Length: 152
Image 1 (cartoon, one colour):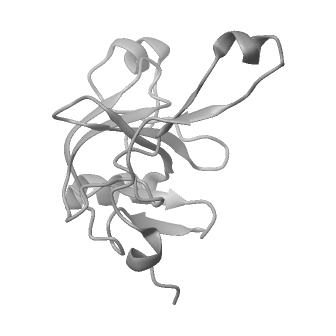
Image 2 (cartoon, one colour):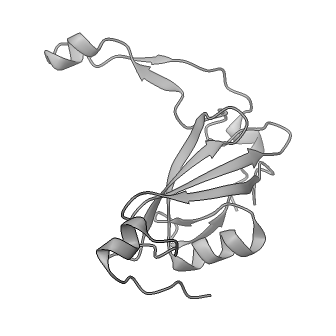
């Protein structure tokens, strides 16, 4: 699958054709959100191949920069993200997918949490003054990664 070439600014920003803007590295940022709750589950990158695979399979598929390969979410953990909706921002350089998370743990994060965003900066004022950068956990771990991800 190849995506339409980017055309005019007016068509990109106000038109009705998906014209994703992949960066110089061939990647586009992707925000993943739970369709039922609106919770942001994770952030990752896609390339043209992973975006095409996502559309064809309806399984969220990303580009792993650390492994330099396609990464179908849930291929190891069983916690698959079924894509229900796909959005792009105004200049089509970010993708937002809304998913239904499945699997026994119903978790997105490789550290065992529902969302990759499981910690919050405790005190914005302290951080602004440079005196404190403490993170507070805002969620419970749903699974032990050591038992789910086996080193190959």
